[in-house]
Amino acid sequence: MITPTFNPEEFSKAIYALVPEHQQDLLIGALNAIQLSEHDIERIGLTLTGERLISNSIVRPSSAQPKPDNSMWQAIVNEVYEFLCTNSKKYAQERKEGSHTIKSLITIIATAIAATFHVAIGVIAGAVTLVLLSVLKIGKNAWCKTQSAQR
Image 1 (spheres, one colour):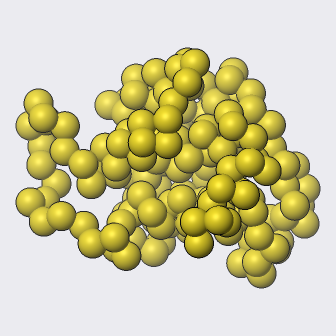
Image 2 (image 1 turned 45 degrees about the horizontal axis):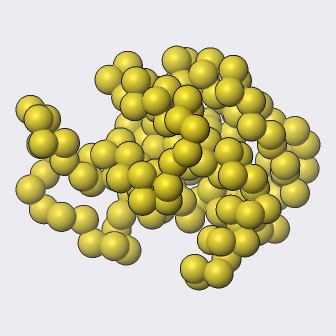
């Protein structure tokens, strides 16, 4: 299993390298937050994926509300869980390669989700970054245990 560690500097570099500029401040705020609840993380994640509208937003991706089984945010959470918390065959090669940087983990997971939803990697890089950030801030084992109990 891959056991990445929380490194704020590495996350900051990944945010500025991979995440669209209009999402960077939101993620830097999450990175620097002393405490974020699960609700806060979900709210930010749904905002990053466009599944939650910001009240002062000019751009509205769609008036239709996503169904829980079609939620891009939930798909990202599930994909991170599969990568970090299971021994699934899907990521066997990546796990075999050993240690990964935060940037490479974001790219691996964002690529898988982007293909599923037929969107560019940049569209979901911010949300993937947020999930990895929350996982590593609270600890991979604790996050995996919590997620496992919810499945």
